[in-house]
Image (cartoon, rainbow, N blue to C red; front, side, top):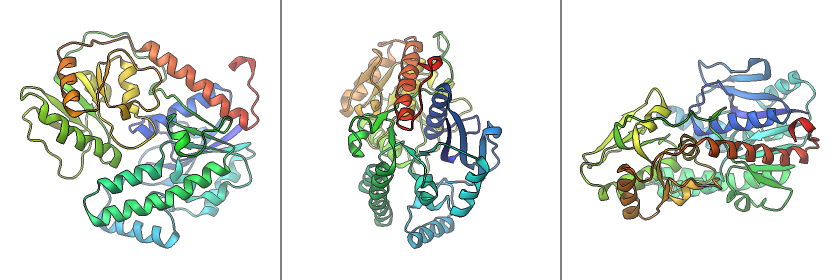
Length: 391
């Protein structure tokens, strides 16, 4: 079976965002199932695809809103309003639908399309008619937009997110209705998208690496708690604001928290132990430098990739319930707390050595095996017959 994996950004071999890590896991599972996968999408400026023989690049785009100029943002907004598209989808309209059709023709005969997330699928929705599709819903995007609207302080941003939510609700419903099968990244997202019925959808447990992490070794600690993320993504920013405003004030002055990743805007903390370190050269080594990893999601949908990575590394963690979306087997060294004072107390407890590191290899193997089983459910809906080699 030959499928086109249609996505906003094609893999470049160095995934740095949760979206890119999830894509790598899904593509890997498809290929383990014996599927020939051709990837179609855009590249980051200056980046090359890691699998050029099986990738068709439509051009390069920088879809980040936080680094765009005010003029560029206004241009995107004006084009989105005129085209009736979402703000996120209009950024991909640097080529025409006909250019995407032409690119598909160069790929040759295919059995179907995997529409990876709503942004690319909505930008070129009419192009993918005529063949069966699988829709991969990384998040319930209209819910995330609604939460972002509620959390926004300025009237303009609230209106922008409210518009996105209205459009996304209709787009997601339409993509799910048209799809032969829908993959979500959390079980809770299936009913939220209206596809919870048997044979229509399945959620995909994910992994963040190609092979298990090494056996745990002694770690050199640089701080009590280390957290990293793409904080310019609004659902992540909501969690960070909750952590800084509600949890951190309950931590003792000597408790050291290091926060990595691009924050954007005026984010600060009066707590003497909180340090913002920006970009770090190695995300894994950074989180291993903390005694405990806070998993602080309070908004959004889909799965938290940092949660999966933390569990694969066997690191102690304190997690909100929302941070555990898409996780069926929570390790014993993860403390669950949603109330700010309880979260702070659990961080202190974990930083003092209880709970301890675990071997995360069993978690990794369980996730990957479950991912492979779930992928087959969608492939069978497209008519793929599982061979004995992959049964």
